[in-house]
Amino acid sequence: MTHTKPAWDPAQYLRHAGHRARPFADLLAQVPGLPTDRPRIADLGCGPGNVTVLLTERWPTAHVTGHDNSPAMLDRAHTEHEGPTPGGGRLDFAHADVTTWTPAEPYDLIVSNATLQWVPGHADRFADWIAGLRPGGTFAFQVPDNIDAPLHALMRELAAGPRWQPLLGDVLRATDSVHTPDVYLDRLARLGCATDVWQTTYLHVLQGPDPVLDWVKGTGLRPALTALADDPEARDAFVTEYRDLLRRAYPSAPYGTVMPFRRLFAVATKEA
Image (tube, rainbow, N blue to C red; front, side):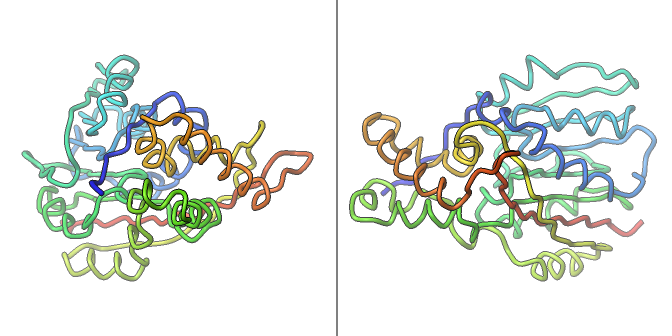
């Protein structure tokens, strides 16, 4: 089967924008001072641009470019966020494939938020990105680190069943799409960076009917939804089966539905 790039839905993704933005804010809180007063910043996998804006709030004079390969996401970003920033900087967006993007100019900061898990071989790109930093610049990223969580494990088990395997056998994100923390620490430290790597588990309290399904429709389920897009009956049947599994794995409480979500963070600063 030929792998199909997932079709992204900005509106669905943004339904949980507050929960999704918090890890990026936590990542930026650990980024040290940048080497220039008017920094150049790249956001790899910017999506609809709503969290890229946080970069302009932290560094008001910066020229920030968000990069993504989804036309739908970029359309939303261009429309809602592009232009001069109040602090005298600028925010713009450009189409780019993170698997091949290489800095064409010196950057003070390169960040990536919940994107690299979709990029096979992403750790092999670190050398090029670090090389594109100014002395004293930083590369920082966070990725979901929960491929073993029920929301992914149940999806994979269902897709591997006799009904769905012919349609979905190799479209879901692989279990080795994110490395262990020590692998990232070793890779970045060997590139001459002062490196901090950590994990955090968020206990998101989600509201509404089937909120975990609603969450994953914006991210991890996108490859399956894309693969079944031409067969709405099959798509709806798969989603219904998956929904029933999620209801048992993530029971609701009077105050909402708790979804534990572990993430991995890395901040690597190049020698000044």
